[in-house]
Length: 242
Ligand SMILES: Cc1cc2nc3c(=O)[nH]c(=O)nc-3n(C[C@H](O)[C@H](O)[C@H](O)COP(=O)(O)OP(=O)(O)OC[C@H]3O[C@@H](n4cnc5c(N)ncnc54)[C@H](O)[C@@H]3O)c2cc1C
Image (cartoon, rainbow, N blue to C red; front, side, top):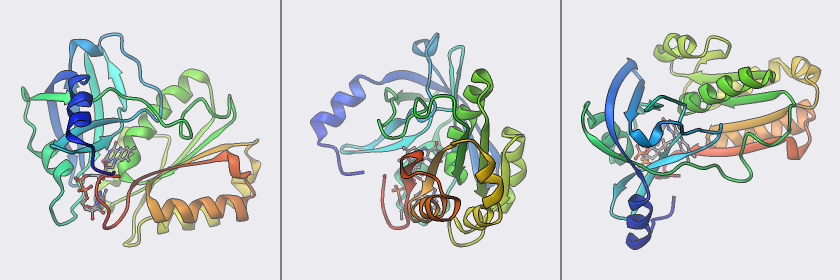
């Protein structure tokens, strides 16, 4: 993400919800579940693809995806990525303890990456450990709407069991070294099954280069229409704060 001018960053933060950390739990070596509480969240709603942010410096934010709001609690699942520092978003979240005050930026989604696309068509969601929150939010919504949802995530091997417990209906695969390689292989192995879905909408999130490859596979190999494939890079090697 480009740096945000200080004045604008302060304005965004001034509009944020005042919350406190209620829980900050390590679910598995690479996953953390944040539960943030605020009276603002009572009655609040989230749409799949909504994004919030935390300010990490005078001119910088990091983005995260609200998974669920229940009562006064907002849940977000965060990957404890082990990229050598500086990693201000990762470090900020790692350091939070119950009772800490937190400013939760107001959430919204990008016009080209929202749940509303595609009406009641089946949904395919592909991603990695940074996409677990989005997958949770989509699973809740798809169940409420009776919409078909096919989720395939690759996560570090030590996080597979915890991810599967959060998302029992998803296909959760152990990742290899190259981000996205396992989902690529899954796509190639499941072309016929994907072709059986009636006019699906595909959401690709997570690692930037992986998303580009998977978009090409969905278009050129599976045969999806260009407009049926929606992408949202969450991180890319060597890039800070997308
Ligand atoms: C719209 C949106 C929604 C997001 N939602 C979530 C979410 O719900 N949960 C979640 O965990 N993340 C989510 N992310 C990803 C998260 O914002 C990035 O991982 C972010 O880069 C973390 O900031 P940082 O300060 O730790 O690292 P940065 O300062 O941004 O990056 C430092 C270095 O770490 C590397 N890096 C960053 N993230 C990863 C990673 N996951 N794996 C390996 N290397 C990495 C970068 O390539 C860079 O070289 C989302 C991102 C976007 C854009």
